[in-house]
Each structure stands twice: as C-alpha cells, then as structure tokens.
Image (cartoon, rainbow, N blue to C red; front, side, top):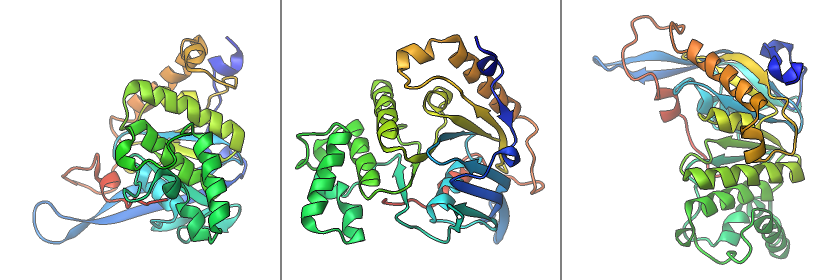
Length: 303
C-alpha cells in the first residue's frame, strides 16, 4: 500500500487552492416555528462553512442527516442564499439560478407529459436553441446515457434507473460547467445504483464537468470522488477534506475490494462517528427534529 493511500491527505478547506467554486464563511440561519408554542426561533443549518472545488474535479460531500448538505447544494444552485458569506463560480458571485449549473435530484423531476427527448431538450429550449439543433443535441446525450431506442417513451414507461439517466442527460444537454447532484441514486435498487455509478464516471471522464455530489453512502463517495468533504453535525461545517488518490479509471469490482479503498472508507467512517457525539449547538435548549430539518425546508429544482 502506498504512503499516499495509507495516509490520505487530510486538509482544512482553507488550505485548498482557489478553484472553480469558492464558498467562504457561509452561515445559514432558518427561522422555524416553535414546537412548544407560538412564534419562531432560529435554526443554524450551516456555520462557518468553507469549501473549494477545483476545475474538473469530482467532489463528494458526506455527513450526518440534517447537517446541511442539501442546503449548501441549494445555495450552489442559486435556489437559496447564505445568511452571511459568499459563494462564487469562476470568481462570479452566485445570486440566483443560471445555466452554468445543472442539478440532478433524487426524485427525477421529469415532466410526465414530455417524452424522453423532450425532457432532455428542456434546458435547450430555455436557452433558445432552434428545434433542429435541440433534437440533435438531445439525441446525442440520450446516446451518452445509454437510452438509445427510448427517445419517444414517456416517464411512466421507464424504470427508476432509466428516469435518472434522463435527468442526467437533461442536466448535461445545455452544457453547464458545473453539475450538482443531490443523492441522485438513493431511490433505486442496489444493483442499479452501482450501474449508474459506473455510468456517471464514464460520462464525467468524457465531459470533464466539475461535479459536486451529495450522498449518505461512504462507499459511493469514495468510489466516485477525487476528494471527499466530510461535514460535521448541526450546525454543519466542513470537518475534514479527504483526498482519495485511487487510480482512474475505476471499476467497482477492482476498486472496492482493494485494501486502499477500504482504508479510506474506514477513515471517513471514523470521522463521521466522531462527529455524532458532543456536536456543537449555537441554540441552547433547542428541542425538536433537528436531524432532518435542514433538508426538509430546502427548496428543489427542475434543472
């Protein structure tokens, strides 16, 4: 086992060189209804969150439920805004949604009245691409995700894994520079999930997109990523950055059975376990469902 893998590089986010995405000193506070009576109280979802994502990098984010992973991804998408701090892409401040970012959600979010091709072409329509060019581009991305022959099917005629392929093709078709993915494979069975992981890596290798991928699954995080950002419990912040360092291209059977993969997986598991006890609270005596609140109240998107 190489020294780099046996002791994977752990850094604080402040030590990472500036890259494609820069999140600086992010704090996010929600005002939530009190469970014991009238009025509202503050819920701190993110506190002093700092992260850099490099150009063309595949970065995964893992953390306990309710730590603010999806809240951060929503802010990257421009669907939510920090209470303080800033997020920039290529040095430009994020102020709202834009076509430089594509997002893929767990729930597919396909239009049921549109065919596969029409769903994939949706972002191109928003960009004002003409019909003939939309058709060509959408068919190219349908081929890329392995759905040749299903162009004229409707979502109800597809399996869960096929729907997620359509969602990925739609997010890629209008050529965003950044792809944001929020637990995109959580709703499919284990075998389909592994197939989709393989497919996603193949697509990433072909398109060279910058990908930020949120997941609860440590195996998935390690298999896909160049680096894994491990978040702390509420309020969420970046606890450690783990450099994976495993060779590419990766194949499930070869990588997951290796000692290096399992060492990194165990390291991340330890970081998550150490963060579940004695986690910091900025709201004293807060009672209620904090574990899933941040994800529940964050918005969703079609693109």
